[in-house]
Amino acid sequence: MTLHFVRRHFARDLGIDLGTANSLVYERGRGVVLREPSVVAVKNGPTKEILAIGEEAR
Image (cartoon, rainbow, N blue to C red; front, side, top):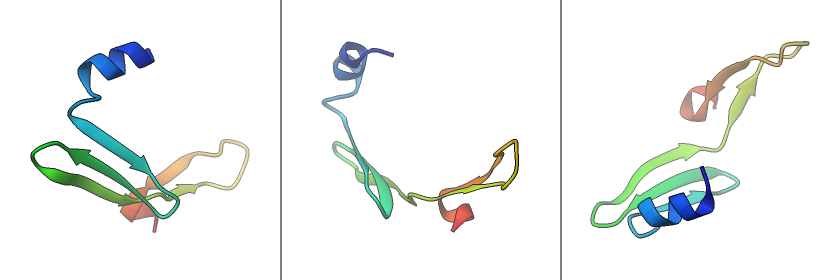
């Protein structure tokens, strides 16, 4: 996905904040539609499997 594609289809309607503590998605006309902790739980070992993301990983 190119930056041009993203700007053409999403830039006027969505705002994404990838913060250090929380990630937010803002939609024009609706406000914040997603607020999740910026956390990923990863299995320790050779596979580094993702176990949980966001609130589940907290």
